[in-house]
Amino acid sequence: MISPDTHLQIGSLLFEGIDQIDLTGPFEVLSRIPNATYRIYGTTAEPVRDVKGLVLTPDAAIGDAPQLDVLHVPGGFGQEGLMEDEAVLAWLRSQAAGAQSVFSVCTGALLCGAAGLLQGRRATTHWASFDLLPFFGAIPVDERVVLDGSWVFAAGVTAGIDGALRLAAELRGEDVAKAIQLFMAYAPEPPFDAGTPERAPAAVLEQARASVAAITDRRTATARRVAAKLGLTVEAAPQPWG
Image 1 (cartoon, rainbow, N blue to C red):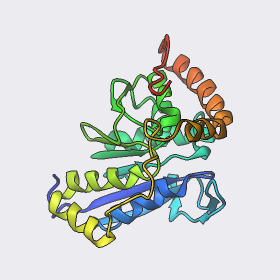
Image 2 (cartoon, one colour):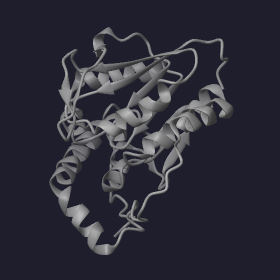
Image 3 (tube, helix red, strand yellow):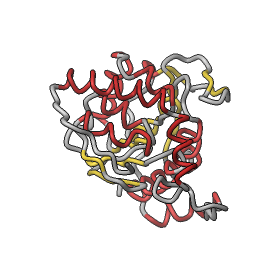
C-alpha cells in the first residue's frame, strides 16, 4: 500500500483497434482512486476507433506523458499492430522502469512481452493467446488475475475490472477498493456459465476459436519473431484447453 498522501499519476495506453472494455472497465476503477490523476495516452493525440468502431480520444500522446506511477496496458486486436513498433515498445520499457505498478489487461500482456518486460514473470492473458506467453519468457498462470510483485495481470476483457480492483487495493488498501466496487455496483451475476474455455460448451468454444483463428495465427508468427529477438527458445507452448 502506498501512503494516501502520495499523489499518483495513472496512465492508460490507447491505440487503434483496442478492445474498449480493456480500457473503460479499468477506467471505472482507476479514475476513482483517491489522490490520483488519471490520463489516457495515445500513440498520437488523434481519436481512434476500438475493434468494434467506438471512437475514443486520448488526453495526450505518449510522448507528452509524465513518468507514471501506474501504467495500464490494455489489449485488443489492434495490439498486433504495435508488437514491433519500437517507439511504443521503448515508451513501455521507460514507463515500466519508473512505475510503481504495471497493470496489463488481456493481450496487453503480449505488448509488454514484445517490450521484453515479461521474462521470468508470472502472467496471464486472454485464453486465445495464453499459449503465447512462453515466447516472451513469461510463466503462464491460468488465473483470472495474477500478481507478480508490483505487476498485476488480468486475463480476458472483463477481468480488467477484477484486476483494477486488486490494483486499487494494492495502492490504497482494501477498504478503498471495496468502496469503489460498491459505488460501481459491481456484483456480476452472468446469465450463463460459459465465460471460460473450461466451462463453455464444446461447440461454442470451437466457434469462438474459429472466429479468432486469423489473428491468432498472426500473433503466433509475431511471438516467434519476438522470441528470436529476445534470444528465447520455446520448444512447445502449452495448450491448456486442447
